[in-house]
Amino acid sequence: MFGTQDLTLFIISGLLLNIAPGPDSLLIMARSASQGFRAGSAAALGVGSGTLVHVLAAALGLSALMAASSWAFGLVKLLGAAYLVYIGLNLLLRRAAAEGPREAAATLPRQSLRSIYLQGLLTNVLNPKVALFFLAFVPQFIAADAPSKPLAFVFLGLVFNLNGMLWCHFLAWSTAQASRRITASPRVVSWLNRAIGAVFLGFGLRLALAQR
Image (cartoon, rainbow, N blue to C red; front, side, top):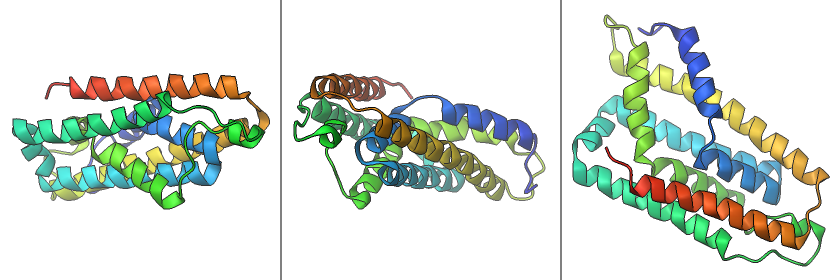
């Protein structure tokens, strides 16, 4: 279809790759735990929009250009790393609220759905490793005789993103359901904030040290 090959294997592989934990998944879970399913869904849609940006950029050759340019890769890498470190430090330095059980359950400051969507978008778009992943992974499933390789690339990217959105929304729903059933003390939430912040900080530092 559209010049692709081994589509079933691509779907299975893409689903397994989407399930692998990363900053996108952690953000969705944290937002769902803080503000419920709608917030988690907004973060997931932001991540999905960022994936579409990477897919279109790769299909148009922009990602290949960035991969070949050390300064472009370095700039995007440092921006993405700085953003992840910023999120991590906010959590590490934040104290658990003591206004009541509902506030104590939050692990991130409350934000509008629009702000959460943009946070998910930036977390994904500012990660150059996602762009390089698409350049390395997707072409393996494009047939050599495909009539339009960019069209085949976009089709596979959309399939990958659809898989990702299904998983991300399940993650948002399951986390929101779990957070409604669990009432954590402010002390526990404070440690959760620190743990999640440390993970984000780790993701940021790992991205800053990543090679092309």
